[in-house]
View 1 (cartoon, helix red, strand yellow):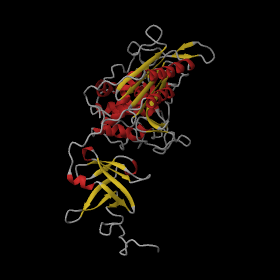
View 2 (cartoon, one colour):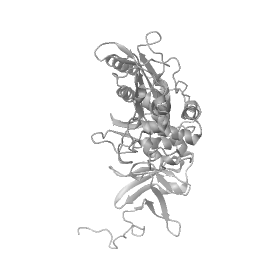
View 3 (cartoon, helix red, strand yellow):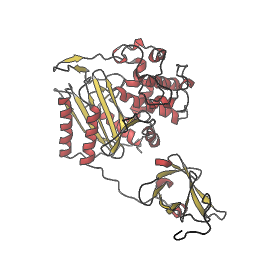
View 4 (cartoon, one colour):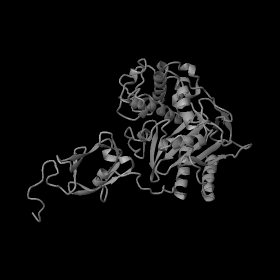
Length: 464
């Protein structure tokens, strides 16, 4: 977990890796015909590489040049909402109307808005909101319209920009200050994202559309999004996005805990048919590809494209930003950059160290346990945690967090959220482990260990 202390410097990338990264960026900018394209890679919380095409300072953007990042803004908004939840100020299962003057969303919940499962329309009912003044949408009534729903509440994933507008209004209502103020003090300042802002800060790239059949440019309008800002307003740099990505990988107790950022990256809705390699969590897109799971978001506004991907397992983040309405594909470029570093320079695991202290009672629990006839191994982890895995082959296993009441809560897999507890006999000896009603015994179907349904008194036998 990240603390407030500075992150130790990272080792530089190998020249051959840097050459491969630069070529990826150069090809993307050239073949995508982007006026400029900037990218960065972070490893273990440090930005270890960045580049821009054309190269600055006179021929193109500098490393600290801002671009609009569009819907990556939604991930920042989701963080603000989850902070409210973690502080006990709201529950994700609460109807939004509990915190806002009834916006006409009925029983649609906070969590459903975060996960895009509230059934709301993808866009506003008025003219193209990204290219028109925010004064056309002065209240949620204009953002949502008279008929805001396209699908039954909670039934399917349907991406919704108005939904995140409502979440921004929710943050403002609960905090008692603007979404922008909450963003600055609760995320940008603690994480040191000095080049991320609601409005542009020089130097910044101007947005362009590129003619589809000629190498000609057309300037795109830059509108302040007003109430729609929580859905797509932010400006940032590739390097700042990578720093934000490092937070999404490990958490930071000044902003959100490691447990909550893991929750963000848990699929919250089934994917569309034919799209089984992608999904959506709470404010983040999820992609499985190349043997790794990527967490992040893509974004676009007229004149700008952006993408941020994080591979928590590799300790890597990569971001790409461009000032073109169409052409380059930053989401593919960022994934390629991340994959290049992961494959060319796989991370070095931390040194093994023994536990600082060992509880003899917990140590006595470790070893082999049987669910019916199948062997599992219970291991002791730091902070009194446990892991239970099949002795061999695939099957149900999980890590468990110790709780104050003496039990453990599953953190992943089939047993996520389930309770593991030790059941003792009257003399204090361990009878069995109870995991969500499943009984684990020291011997297969141990007769006096409380196996539900009992154990045949004849015991084990040969050919029937």
